[in-house]
Image 1 (cartoon, helix red, strand yellow):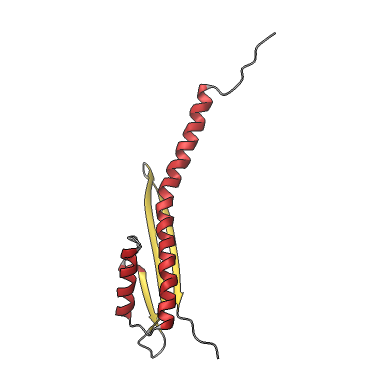
Image 2 (tube, one colour):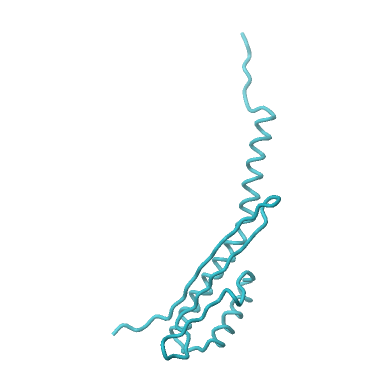
Length: 127
């Protein structure tokens, strides 16, 4: 009676561990990028309520955004990534647009790139 091999060989274990290491590296690089993105989403939801409730100028909105970014540990969004739009013949901000890109080195010369676009608009009262 021949005895058949049961279980995995050393080579198959190395392959499985290589796949697990690749996926773990991938997740460890993407997780901070998306964690920061969800912090930006939270800030934008708060700013949407803020610009709806109050009449804020561009400078006031930028000050509030930077305070919230510092509190939320958001470093990827720069001043150039923020657009503040005003209504026609209006000095108050009606819409905030944040459009930014995050590049994270992955393996050797390969980088992971995340493009994020968020908008917060003042809600108008329905009559």
